[in-house]
Amino acid sequence: MPQFGVKLPGLVPRYAPTLRDVPDLVVEFERLGFDDVMDGEHILFAPVMHHPGGSGNMVHGRDTQHSDRCDSMLMFATCAARTTRIRFVSGILLAAAHNFAILARQAATLDQLSAGRFTLGVGAGWYADEFAAMGIPPAERGRRLEEILRACRELWAPGLSEFESEHISFSGVITEPAPFTPGGPPVWWAGDASHRVTARRVVTLGHGWLAREAAPEAEIEASAAGIRAACEQYGRDPATVGMRVSLTATEDWNKAQSFDDLVEASVARVRRLVPLGITHFNVPLNYYGLDLDQLGQLLKALREAVEIPGV
Image (cartoon, rainbow, N blue to C red; front, side, top):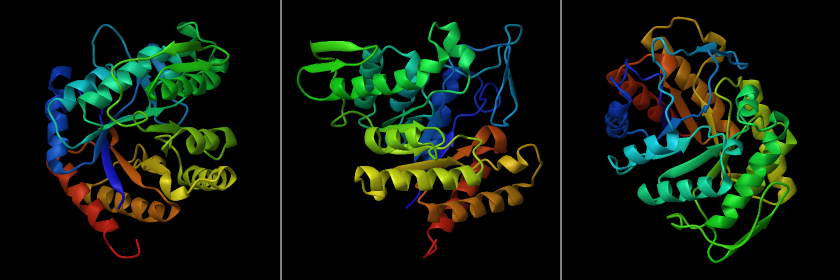
């Protein structure tokens, strides 16, 4: 049965008075019945960042602090202490900007603190200047991303670890704690999986695929086909690969809709995408602007839609 999550929106102050109140909001998401909660990452911001996917400009400044973009791993750890069932998904974490050993240890620690409720979603990121400002050549971030995740997988395995790549080399070491989940938390890869390199990473190095939040359905369909082709090439059962998409109606991004229209459009999108093999759907609360009661009604409608035989 498909899973439904909610992405942490621009929270402060609309949905939570302060960042310290975000765990209370996640408790409400769990109470409503959502399967997981997602949060993305930027590390450095420009005053204005033009999102290439069509989601508009991101504006930041020091005159009035309005951003909710805190450290996802720390926020998830705090929320895990307040919840018992809901999962936590980084969507996405810019792994190429992290030290491999620290990332492996943080992810294993969060996996322990949450009793296995953490999914590490990673991607190369769309804002190249962010990497350049951190001294990481933007053109290298894809290769570094893969190296770092391979190194993490080695460190999550039992026994002494060793690894050799272009930028990383170690042997005879272990990191503590060991992850709660054998082999480490599930890793999901983001990007356009109609590209062979992304599909290969999903199938050979991960547990699932994360669509771009603004991905049109044509890209989602092509990515699903790319993942199926990679499964055939590398001998993996496609049923073991999860696929997550956002319920953002990108063609109507700035179009005002009634609540009933929004529910109808979301249900229709789910019904179109489930046959492609999509296993997880994400409600982008920031773009829906729903209160918690409406959010619960939307979730109920979505679950009823996928419970219909043949859907």
